[in-house]
Length: 234
Length: 234
DNA sequence: CGCCAGGTTGATTTCGCTCAAGCAATGTGG
DNA sequence: CCACATTGCTTGAGCGAAATCAACCTGGCG
Image 1 (cartoon, each protein chain N blue to C red):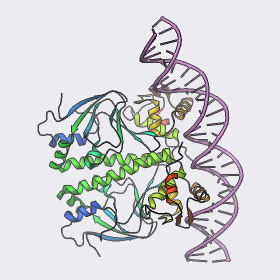
Image 2 (image 1 turned 120 degrees about the horizontal axis):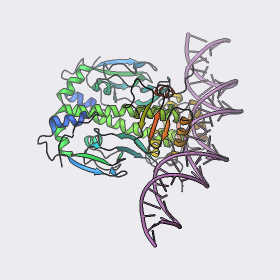
Image 3 (image 1 turned 180 degrees about the vertical axis):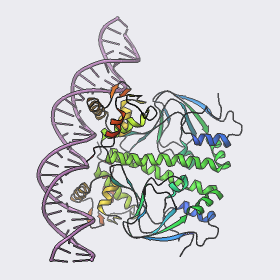
């Protein structure tokens, strides 16, 4: 099966939408649907770009390994979001790797189609620029956080980010589900998995949240939000 | 005085060049030359973009402050490089602040001119995208480094980055000059200035480099490069 | 059943931060 | 010109957060 435009997802995929609006003339057979198992790599650091990817379902992780072989999870790509555009549009090898974190259906758009769409409609390029700008802002925040905030605070903030959709502003008693393993969460905030365990332990002992497998119960989201701001002086 | 195209600098300013090639029809009076003293802010985090900036001479620092008021130097902008384009092109407030680190001459191009240039020539947008992609790659590297590498290693790598131009591949006995104060260097690698002092002390004691004010002598650049890879197992 | 990956826990160490003081260079006002 | 503050940098002592090393548990799954 191959349709150019996936069913509209809940998340921002302005780039893909722009592509569909203009770039895909015959809407059939231009995008290829692929399937990945958890842990399966989609592309590696250093590979040349072969196309543009969009997560239809599942979850994708963007990884980077440094010289010492240390690997780190930089960010998650959720259903409806595109990835791999940077390398494709600049014509440089991938600076990061992508891998499926859950079983995932990925839509892949050939490079030629994307290039044509970009050439035909300037708005497409702008859409990708905006997307990159947002990713960049997040990367900058991450730098700041890793330098200034304790791992406890970083984890609390990540919890809030995960709970973003489940967070009924009203409410006490938020429940959410961790999208990835604890190892991956540790990697995401840049700590060892042992430290991750301990941090979770402390947070449970404080009564900020209760963890069972990947399920998290947050009795008082407001309190957790306050704690996530770091230790306040006065 | 106001000329559209600055004298060609040694560094990459593909965006500015693209602008000059197409966007600036009457080449006079479109860019404004401004002057900043060390420490003087160029724009603040949260400000709306008013134009595009290009460093003609001097040095500019991109800063970010987090919720707790902690400030950090994210990167340097050297002569010939443009900055402030992200906020301008996305139409969002500046996510970072810019300030002169040395006495600087800054060329400022009004928003309208840039927007027109972008609309007229798709290549301009692509040039900015490339620039952003490069900045993003650096930000990702920075995240990895701050998490995985010790502050000693991070500093050594920064030294190498500074010495990039002075580094005659041949050579023993490289000399270079620190572009900014030690406080700013500390902020750049995400450590306290006290720690910075100690790290420099250790590096001197090891004979890796000698520091006098802002002057640095590196007797054996090759050895420093090896050390900058981190502690190797075998 | 035995194996193994993911996770937890404990003991110990290390790296970098905090707090505090001191010092040299520069400025500033009387 | 000197007394004084200010700023950038260095040094010391002590502490604390997170890494490291090392078991050990647990639940799948062949």
